[in-house]
Amino acid sequence: MTPGYKRVSGDAVEYEVFARKSRVEALHLVGSVVAPDDDLAMAYARATYDEERWCEMAIVRKEHVIELWQPGEA
Amino acid sequence: MSLPDLVLSIADNKQMLGLRYAEWATRAPSLEADIAAAAMGLDDLGHSRVLYGCLEPLGADPRGPERESDAGSLRNLAYFDQPWSEWSQFVAANAILDTAFTVMIEACVGGSVEVLQHRLRKMLMEERYHFLHGRSWLRSGIDKEPLERAWREAIEFFGPPDGETETLRRDGKLSMGPAQQRRRLEEQLEARAPRVDIDWKAWDPIRRRTARGAIDEHTFGMLRGLEEKKYAPTAAKG
Image 1 (cartoon, rainbow over the protein chains, first blue to last red):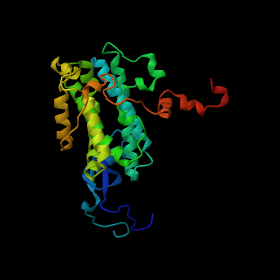
Image 2: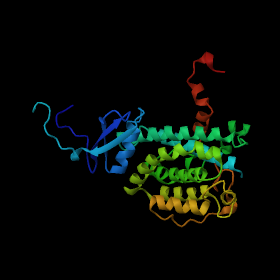
Image 3: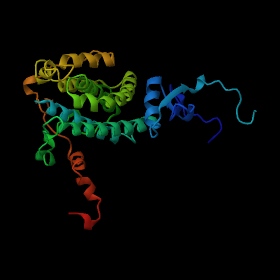
Image 4: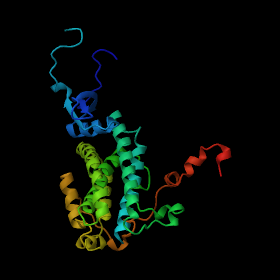
């Protein structure tokens, strides 16, 4: 993938999707979706990543994730 | 019109809604919307299977042999008779008709019939995501024509104010009658239904619609498995 590539266009924003299969497991990143609002992002996340029996799923706007460092910077 | 008749109508409509959603699985405006169309299609086809499975426990299965030869015997709304050519038609069906079917299922789950209380509850959870999808796309703005048509057919689906659906409510089998269902749909969508004049005398209580007609030949053939035969090896064709 081209560095800096963004699938987002127009009013849409990117959301990270987190899920876990059991309570003892931590939430982990399973993928991302692009949507213009939170409602549609929820519907898309559920439709796209529903192949597993998740006990919890959550989404967060990628712009709200605060990065401490990136690969190669540590 | 009995409760099994109503359940069969919901089942046939969910089946057709699922098929029409699936037709858009590669034509929606974005990859995510394609996937959502496919997923919602699968959900609704699954819901129709559950609903068909409720007919026997309800004590009377109204499905007759005519369903094999007469597309007009299927109980789907006219909105599903033809494939949709515009994304607006998809959105109006998703936001209004899919939600209207959910409202009817809520009325079944809230009613006194145990098999419906238990078997239909999970559908309500899955339908939450259909609703979020439909409402969000609806807010982005769509053409007026499919919107008004979907509202009209939703109101027809709920039935006349003093008809047998209302009797099922009075008997406790449904928790909401047509008037409450319409209000619930309006609350959900945060919108008032447009003014529609329905000729209830022309309304078919079995198919829950006033318009004549039936699903297209190709879709009917697919439902009966005839389309599959076209692609079968010659020896297997019977």
